[in-house]
Image 1 (spheres, one colour):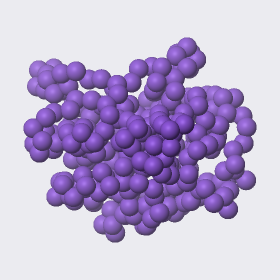
Image 2 (cartoon, one colour):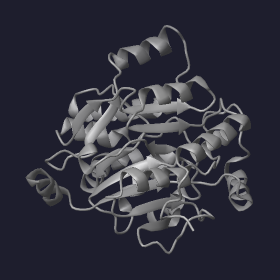
Image 3 (tube, helix red, strand yellow):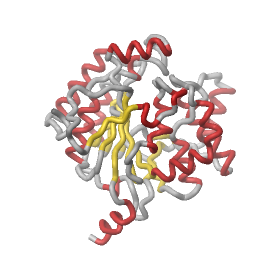
Image 4 (cartoon, one colour):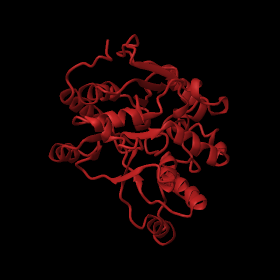
Length: 321
C-alpha cells in the first residue's frame, strides 16, 4: 500500500495522448493532395497505410477502458477531425487540433515525426503522460508501475539493437542498401545525442505505448531546438526528421529513465499483411501489441485487421456514443 502511495506522490495523474487521422475523409484528402500530392502505393512516407482509418482508435480505447481504467484524461490529436463514434461529452476525453500546439509554418502537417515534438504542449496535459498511435493496444491489465518506476521516472522500452551504429554503416557502405526514412530519423536522433553527450544509443523504439515526462520533453527541446527548427516545414516525412527517440536518448544520458528491452511477451508488433502474426500474438499473449499498417498491406489485410479487433474487443467503451 505504501508503494502505491509513494508513486502517487511522485507522479499524480497520468494522461494518455493519441495521434489520429481519418485518411478517408474527402476534406482531409483534398488538403493532403493540395499540399503533398496523392498517396503512393509503394511509398514508405506517403502510402495509404500511413493514413488509413480502420477504427483502430475505437478499439484501442476499448482496450484502455478494459485494462487501464486509472488513466486520468485522454487527448486525441487530430487535423480538424472528430471520430464519428466518439462521445465528445465524456469529460475524460478531448480532441486537440494541430493548430493548438503546432506553429503556422508546420501546417497542414501529415508528418507524425514532426507532430510528436509538440505533444507536450497540449494545454492541461499532466506531467506524467503516455503516448500512443491509434494502432496500439493494451492486451492485459496494466498499472501505473507498468510505465513509471517508484521514483516517478519513465520505463523506456526499446528493441535491443547491439552494434547498431556499425550495422547501419555496414548496410549503407558495404551492402549499398538504402536505409528507410524511418531508420534515418532514428539515426538522426542518436547522432545528435552522441555529439552532445558522447554516447551512442542503438536501442530502437518498440513501436507501442510509451511513457514521458512533460518537463523532460521541454528540456530536450531547449537543448536541440536549433536542430528541430529546420524540420518545422516538413509537412510529410523527410530524411532529416528527428524521431522522438531523441527524448528517450536524452533521458538515458541524464539518468532520467529506466531502460527495459522488450520481448514478444511484453510488446509485439503485428504486421497486418502477415497472417502468421495473428497466431504469434495468440501464442505470446503480450502485454501490449500494435497492428502495423504500411505500404506492404492492402485493403484485404485491413479488413482482416478490423474483424480481428471487433472480435478481440467486442464491448463498447465509455468513450463511444
